[in-house]
Length: 152
Image 1 (spheres, rainbow, N blue to C red):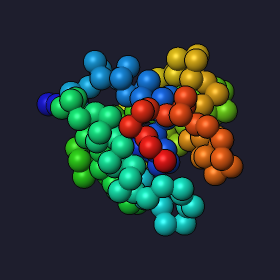
Image 2 (cartoon, rainbow, N blue to C red; image 1 turned 90 degrees about the vertical axis):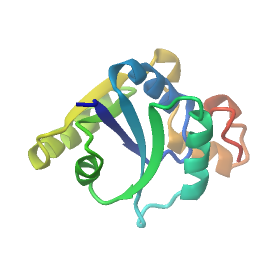
Image 3 (tube, rainbow, N blue to C red; image 1 turned 135 degrees about the vertical axis):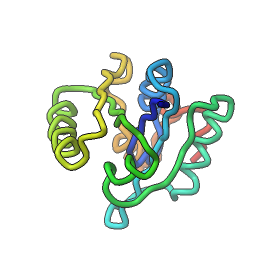
């Protein structure tokens, strides 16, 4: 059976921290689906199509990675794509506490999926999509925090 991992998030925008987690997870899985969760009640900066385009461009030469949009519960999407793993990146203890609670709920709802946490490399600890969005919204230079394919 193929080891399929779902890496869920909004990726608004995808950062070099996300890329770090994905690239380090590549040897662990046969396939990684970068799942862009669509939440109509959440305010985002970039349209879904732009986020898909960026991820597709970043990984155009990596057949083990694909980007998709999904709605609803992450565990329901895991079931839909036959993912046995939910990949999450951890930057600090606050991330861990938040992700641990979600992972425990996911395990209750959908026991077939295991959550896998990877600590980001220390250089990427301060980088988050929300900080990058704030920089962009306020005219700051965010190029050092996003892959070169992310043109805003």
